[in-house]
Amino acid sequence: MDIKIADRMAHINPSAIREMLKVTAMPNVISFAAGGPSPEEFPSKELAYLAGKIFETDSYTALQYSITEGYGPLREITKNRIKRKFNIGRDFDDLIIVSGGQQVISLTTQCLVNEGDIVICENPSFVGALNTFRAFNARLIGVPMDENGMDINALEQILKAEKKVKLIYTIPTFQNPTGVTMPLKHRKQLIELADKYDVMILEDDPYYELRYSGENVPTLKSLDETGRVIYAGSYSKTISPGMRIGYACAHKDLIAKMTVAKQTQDVHTNAMFMMIVAQYIEQYDFDSHIRECCEHYKAKRDFMLNKIAEKLSDHLKYTKPEGGLFIWCEMPRGYSGIEFCKFAASRGVVCVPGTTFDVEENKDNNCFRLNFTIPSTDQIDKGIDVLADCIKGFKQ
Figure (cartoon, rainbow, N blue to C red):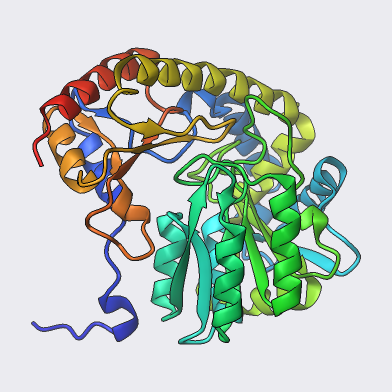
């Protein structure tokens, strides 16, 4: 049967990361391809206890339909926490609980971006966001990145030249896939440009609390004086990605429209998991849990960086992130990240080719992304040795 796929989906390719997860299930494969926290840091016992208590005492709320805006106690806990810790949220803002940070991207696009409108994003950028923009038939324009994140001068040139820019998408802190963090000066310039050219900013910020070195940089949303910034937050990287609990903080008028849009997608976020997250934050030391995660991930980051310096530094360039989950590797010009990742996979080590995150899906992209939070130090040790042997024997 010849199924006629809608035009908006016909050109969307499956996530290479999701496809690679199938490969990583094979025995003896070392995976640097994941994009999540370590299962070792899931607070499983606490969550199991809370789930049991909820079913004993309030199963009706957990199993019945919920309101679209999200479970009330979790909304208030989240509002208060991000205001107290990060100065996020002003009188004109509101907050909605959503099905992971990915849904913030989808709802924002659905509410703001018309077909043919331009979305500006960092290049490279998060593939989940890129595919969402593509699915809504937006026109993507990538801004080159350096050690300070998005090239602000290049961004301004695009804003000057293009008249249909509707949204700037950025991951300013521990960017996915590069791990780079945008400095405060550039954040202020970004907001000034958005004000000047009347463009909204979507700040995707799932990694902000996973800092292992350096000083915190204020979020874009905390600098927002007018309601121009939409903040996408998530509990996926600090509690559990499988629970799919995220949130959007934005101008109340936009949140109202996003609420209507969410009703067309999934009605409401999983009620049981919203209740569990709310009670976990209330009854346990959430900040202490995050500190433990950071200590764990810092050790793994340092181990991988030292191993790369020892084995790969003569063969490629790489980022040195102050937090987050990823290290970005750039091979010499002319090398193919796709072909190299295929070669490495044949030797039992899986990483993600750079073209996955490329706005233009450039097949000649010479980069690849490594995750350090999930593999063990033993796997990192062996896996980087394999990659070093691969790059020495890799033939273009």
